[in-house]
Length: 606
Image 1 (cartoon, rainbow, N blue to C red):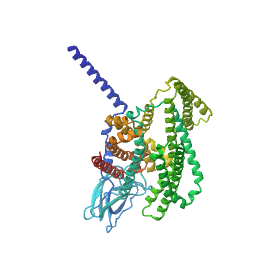
Image 2 (spheres, one colour):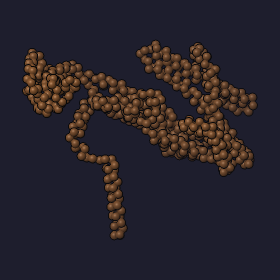
Image 3 (cartoon, rainbow, N blue to C red):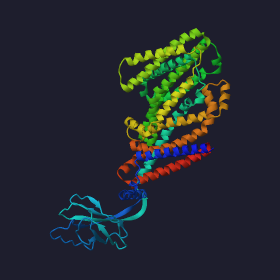
Image 4 (cartoon, one colour):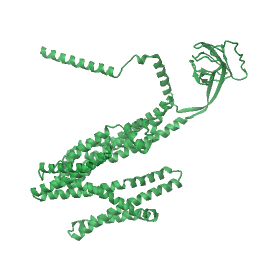
């Protein structure tokens, strides 16, 4: 018992000793020096800054200002000094002596100045006219406009001509009002709030679907045969290429038609109705149950026609919105932001139409290929499946590696033909090797691969701070809040997708198993078993992220991301601490207000 107690004491002593060594090295490496905090010069500078920060430039008065000067020689001239006789009917200053040596202390008096005023006393150097603060408390006049005090002369190079000591007296008049800096701060804090709102909105729109791919409990059971995976990969790549080609072809055909606004307006109204009736006929139950080959071909043709009409509708809608937005900006001058918003929505549709159609095409062909591959693997012999697996895996591997190689070639500008056929050969060989190693009909854990790839991308994106991201976006879209919104939006995607996916992983498994037991597919499982359980925490996380984005926007402003941070860093660099204090005060009020609002929303919906 005694030995055990001694052993524990030795271990505790070693732990304490190691901890002391670690903290000693931490003090050394971080250059901890408490002598600096007691330095008089630093303390004076700190006091000046803290006092300025305690007086934010928010409220101001109209001021009555009076400057009164008196000539002064520094040092005293060798010859007789010119006499100075002030006009006693006007405001004037009187010095104990009109010359002196550096660091001498003289008495100064002022007469007929602004009653009950305050202000500084400055030394105006000749011949430069530079203003030099004198080591003295600010003057303060009485009800008759008189003041008296002592000043310490500055240490300046001797000059023969007279220099000037100037007293500036100020008095507030009228009612208080918001300063110009307060108005600018208000505009910038609004910009910050809406910058964070857009970043949060963009982020959650992408983070929600991505979070389902990053949830282990949803992806762990997603398994497919090798033929299904290979055909799905081929279908996705071919579908994306065909979708992009189709958009470019339709766009070139419609280039002249889009100039006729009557056709555009008619198309925006009529095309959605035509597409709706076409899809409703294709997916009518009686038609779906029919085994007639002619009806199957007709359904396929109508569905393809509806897809083409959908692309045309997006082109028409984009042109319609940009035209309407321009017209509103020109005609309704009181609400120009409404027209700007409509125009930008049209521009967004135009920009993302190729991406949307390419993804739709890839998803359609990928899903179709996956079903065909799974049916083929289930219904055919092992030897045939193994042969086809090798061919499909080789093609899919070659296509994937060529795509990866194209991305590497773009980044590093290799520009060699080997970046195409060499990766294709390596991918094909790896695909063949994979088909030979695996059992032909054994389902592969596709979901786990998607899970790890998604989590890796999210971790990599989240590890880059928005302050770094905004530098890239500033180059892309220019200095301003749009660059900040993009940087915060990208970081929001990674952060919220992680939080959302972890929330999905912690849901109750009962509803998930019950829905899967009915034979529901992955999408139906998410809609009916997952979403009802995650809505409250998703709302809570979203509000919390908006709060974070407001605070982070003050930091990215230092790198040109707009918002209140851009104004704050300018005032700090210019040593305008009272103005900077106004921005800090606005940030604190905004964060506190958003915390209260988010708590109310959480109480109501969570």
